[in-house]
Image (cartoon, rainbow, N blue to C red; front, side, top):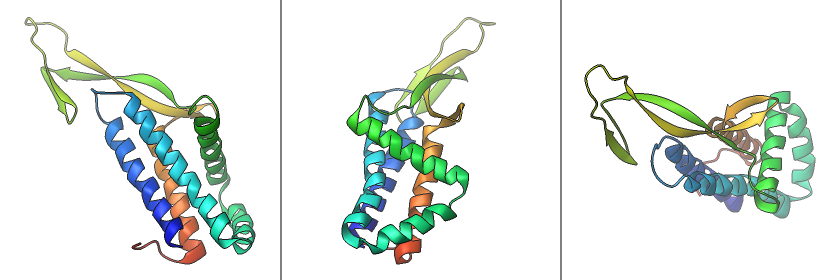
Length: 169
């Protein structure tokens, strides 16, 4: 079980990096994609490790476990597996990027940098445009980080239900 739990911790690590990057206004946008790719691969590896290390018991367990998931959870798991396949084997993740407009007044600061605005009196407030990443699921834009958090929670339940609490290595 150590390798399965290690992959789960790896997915959590990259999700943390993904969430950090999603909050930054400046810097290399490609980093978001790197962290998403790493998260998707590590998360998918949880199932692969189970299949490699614990078959056929895992196959039987997994079939029953999947049917106990809600339809929304089943759809999310399928979406994330399919998106990982797109990322690794085809043209990249299906995530889309939109722009989020932030009214910043006279200054803005986050871990990626600082902007100070100087404008004449009466000028409209300044806006900062930063990327917002989402998946299109059932015709609805769902933030990537939110989707990944929910997916990781499902995987944690999978590990816990199969082998007990996900504590230390």
